[in-house]
Length: 108
Image (cartoon, rainbow, N blue to C red):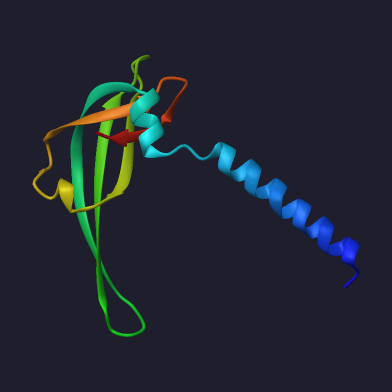
């Protein structure tokens, strides 16, 4: 392959990475910049999968709902760690969301 082709490939990859990372919003950013509200846990799921080596993997999910500042009820299913084990369906949780993009939200 010609040297100029490698340069073009590298430039395209850099542009794609820069574009992708600018659109990603982390949970920490949502907590810092977002609006806090109270949500409710509507479901908890534990998913067990077995990989090709026979190892069992456990993944915890919480489905929560909250109402944003304009009154729209929003629901999200989120993969969570063990720090949410003590919560049950019906419990209140702290939710942070970006007012201009309420689909970007996370648990507190």
